[in-house]
Length: 87
Image (cartoon, rainbow, N blue to C red; front, side, top):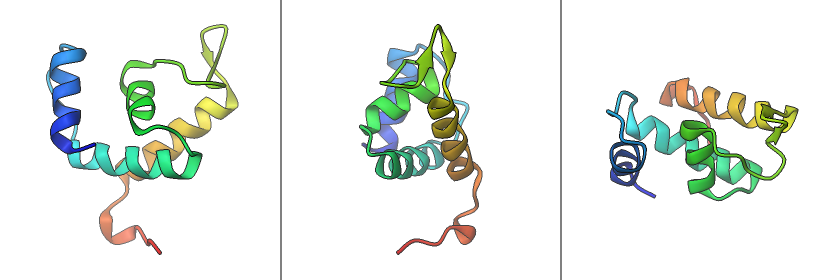
C-alpha cells in the first residue's frame, strides 16, 4: 500500500475529497495492521468507511475490539514521528 493507493481509494471508491494526511494514514494503517495482524486494506476500509472486520461490530455498533483498533489507529495517526520509537 502507498499514499497514492490511499488517495485513490478516498477519491475513487469513496467519492470524497482527501482531507487527511495520506502519509499519516499510511503509517497508522501499517502499524495497526501489523500489531493486530490484519490486512492493511481491511484496516483502511474499517477506519474510513466503517466496513466491518471479524469481531469489530455487533448489531451495528463497535465492539471493544473494534474500539481498540480505532483508538490504536488514532494514536498512530496523531503521533508526531519524533515521539514514535520503533525496533
